Amino acid sequence: MNLASGMFVIVGIIEFLYFRSKFLSSKIHTVVLLALVVISSFYLQYRAPNIIILIIFIISLYRVFNIGRILKGRMHASYLGRTTRRSSYWLMSTQALILIVYLSFIWFSSFGLLMHLVLYMILGLQLLLGITVYSAIVRSRRDSAPKVRDQLGGDLPTVSICIPARNESDDLRDCLDRIVASDYPKLEILVLDDCSSDKHTPEIIRSYAQEGVVFVAGAVPPSYWLAKNWAYDQLAIAANGEIIIFCGVDARLQRQTISKTVVALRSYNSDMISVIPKLDNVTVNPFVQTMRYWWELSLPRNLFKRPPVISTFWAINSTALKKLGGFNSTRRMITPEASFAKQLFLEKKYQFFRDNGVFGLATDKSSRDQTDTAIRTRYPQLHKRPETVFLISSALFIAMVVPFICAFVLWIASFTAALVSVVVAILYVLSYYSLIKEVRQQPSLSVALMFPFAVIVDLFLLHLSMFRYEFGSVEWKGRNICIPVMHVTTGRNTKTLIK
Image (cartoon, rainbow, N blue to C red; front, side, top):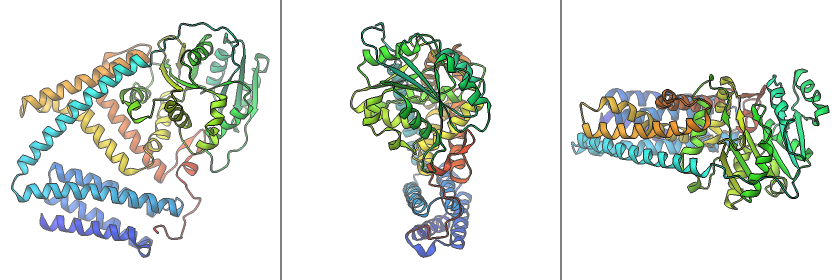
């Protein structure tokens, strides 16, 4: 054990020196370092196969992933060097702390005490988080329920509803059919053809010209812009409304949706609102989109000044949008609306709602589109940092999956521990079911009972998102969005990667 831990520490020192010296940034040195990390980690796990060493081994997998980014060399040198160095230091520091604590208990012959401390610490944190999540869901359900009873009246603001469209199917036609039937009297409808490679999309848009739909010809996005943000920016420039509403082609509006949106902005004296729609198609994947909503509502986001926001349907005052710098200030952000919401939340000018029937808003998104959206958004939402992915994934698995396992396993070993796990599992199922009742047209308790599987699916998509962004491509509407998001260069940069 001493030899294995000593070898592991020496490899860690070598990795630290690697990231400190520009002379160690050649490909051969990177390959040797990668091999050393793999060998030392496997050897340590072989010599001491227990749960503590397993955690250290799992962290080593993220270190291997991090070093692999340097071998891939697909990002600009300064960005790659800065991010990989930061990730390496964080991951190794975490391993060092765990290893020091582990060896300290081993040397004092108190490994059993360590395991009991770890167990009860985990149980306590699970219970605390379970209560926090359930309380947050209850509070969010209350606070996000719109209290809009007023009717339209007075001098109405002009509204521009803006829809970016690229290579769309008949979903676009379904979306526009509902929008043109709106009862709002001062409405401008703009649809941008985002350089579609098919003829179907522009034909659909132009076929609604007599209904008042304005065709906006989109320009090719610059390499340093995300294409969707570029489309939003062009639409915002073309819009004449005092209020601008952005929605996707999967949005399904009722006749009163836009009117109620204007009333909500006025009632709450807000410059921006976003709305969680009902899930219209209950036959598709029951996990991905529902979990996306659950994350927005289950965390006490207001404490961190990061309010929930949904991209399907959101409205903003055009003057406020310009004041915030427009989309030029968020041109690389996967969710630009989150940045605007955060800034306006600090000014108490932002409101988040779930549709409880007031707005009449729904979404009809296929399972594939839901999965693609999760892959596109999950890794950037964690600031594109592998160490954050490890931290969040570990915390979620321990807090939200392990209780369901322990509820069955620990009855033999510890009745108290099993009872705590059962309570935590019930809290999560209840919180998930309370959300399902609000957002799905046909709420199902059986879906709520599958909560741990929903978390596992979400963690899988998070890691798939990380892998695609770092080593592959993330296609969105036929475009690889890794280039603006990850500072990807078109060829391997042969200059020094680590400075």
